[in-house]
Length: 203
Length: 203
Image (cartoon, rainbow over all chains, first blue to last red; front, side, top):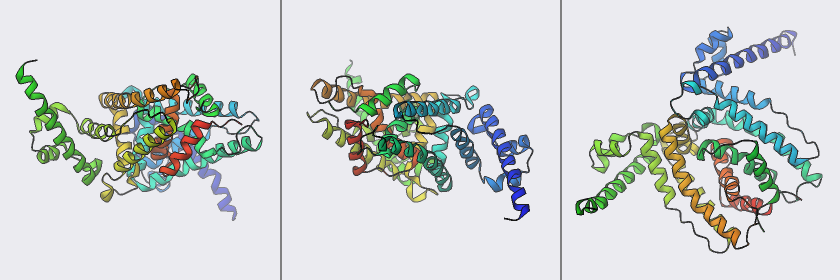
């Protein structure tokens, strides 16, 4: 709690923000393969060592960029769980579509799943990247799980509903389409998905 | 329909099976990164040209290996959709867990999602690999969608249920845990998932 430490923090956050902005811009331009940490340092006008101390590899930096895109999504229970879930899932769809743009012009194939798939592969390859990705999703998902618990307490959801399983069904369907089957995701699909999960399939 | 063509087919299928067996064995030993098409050709005792004619890249061959693991899963409506879905999803879990073993000993990180994530990334990078992966899943999923339609016709599922959306919720949750959140998947989770999707979340 020394004055120098307190003064130091905002400067550090400001540098982080500048780095992540530069990284996102470069990712959008270059795509995953041609993304370079050195170029980010140059663009953000910070020392390479500063950048590497904070994010030791390209993959760590990319996970931080993805986390920042996700952090822009607000999560709050309004009393109408259907509306809240629809809004939140549409934000995920929009975030995934923003990531779809990454390196699109330069990609040889369908870049739709590109960045998300590269992050998943990097997470599987390197334990520390995997831990960073999982921590990011655990933190984000905790907010929506709280929302679902509130909806359950308010009597909107069944008392025996498991928020974690329900959210896996919803977010999982979006990522499954993006990463595995390649089917499109949009607002109309989100509607059908939320209806299916809330109503249930049993006759 | 010449005799030579007919005689040729089983030999070709036999060679394919030998190649895919060798490829799976090597994948299990080496993992994705160190997997080499040349080594597969040597192990399967086929000419490299034969192998490259059939699967032009390492990624194409790996997709074929994954497709073969999936093809071992039977899909048939028994009159009890809950039992059928539970059995089928457990087969997916087992298949994913088999793929988890790929290169485990040599991986630096948590290889749990390794092969599946690498295939997703390759599908995103190369349009033709993406098309092969999507065709594989479309073919496999068509069988389970037929099963769900039969269950709907038999009155086990609601008449307005959308089989494609329902299956996305179920398979999607498994892949989401494997590729994104890193949470475990097992038979107990499959049970909670099927219960959630059949019952629905609304109070």
